[in-house]
Image 1 (cartoon, one colour):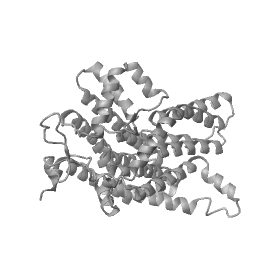
Image 2: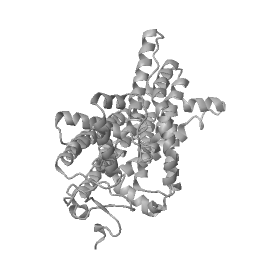
Image 3: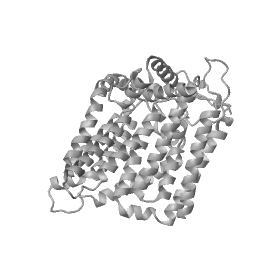
Image 4: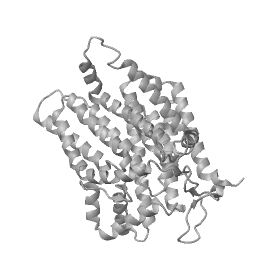
Length: 448
């Protein structure tokens, strides 16, 4: 069964990435008059004003991220670099350049989730299956065909969690030699650089990034890895300082949007829609089951439920040291983002992205910390369940790409309804430059 699942997982990853390449090169790109058009215009305008070297420097060096209509838009920097490179390779294909950036971000997600899954389970078959469940999720595959900042959010979340986990999971070298100490500090600084390169893609992802960075520094300090903590914190500070002012500038707009009742959808409507059309039933089931298992295991086996003679400080220190501190950071983040969903009036389907990202990090780090759960996942029934989830994810993906909305004839992005980002591959051709795939009430798919 392990060989079957490994083959199915790898073949599915290759097939879904090939399908994404086909969609980028051979299908009509989705357009609306709203966020995606604004992002396109901003990227083209900046691309005309900058050289390639300046665009690369803005992407890779500490500097304030752009603020677009009251929102952080670090994604714009990626689009500008892609646009500049594309003009040198094949001028006149701006939309294809944007799609190439998205394909790159999707590939990074697949690679990260495969490595993250293998690090957690030590099982290539489970890792490949989980990576496919992520890539084929409606919001991941679907939104990757849009020019939206969430593409960077979806890539950054797993990358930041995985790199922080790898750093905290390392054993402290036995020898106190200056060379090994310097090498460890350089490695910590390098990981911090990559994490900050993705960093805060949108203002709503800032809590995720800041809590993980804080958990990492605290975990390193409690592991008595002071030089690594100092290197990590120094590199992070160089990136965090410039985006503090832009982040503060977005807060008024963010708070205003939280109360927009026209985007409110009750939980009884929101939850089923998100389960099918955003996270997807296969990934939703996997995350719920794995997160529940690791939370139960962590509570049952934590320092709070054993070593009754230990002091409160000793128990707290044990729980915040190294990888366990990062685990609790993810659990706090998951509770925070789920709480905001309940509180928000502006309850669109995209708000499920951050709980999905946080639950993924929580589940995989929890599996790494629990040999018992790893053992349970290596059984034949668990692999059969994973294979069934892969098949279910393919069924949902192909239905949404080929069959839904009469094969694309009636698809439209509704102004005030819950979004269907995983739109069909075949859309009707636009009739004019002002035409777009949007609708108000009624919508084309409202017909009997």
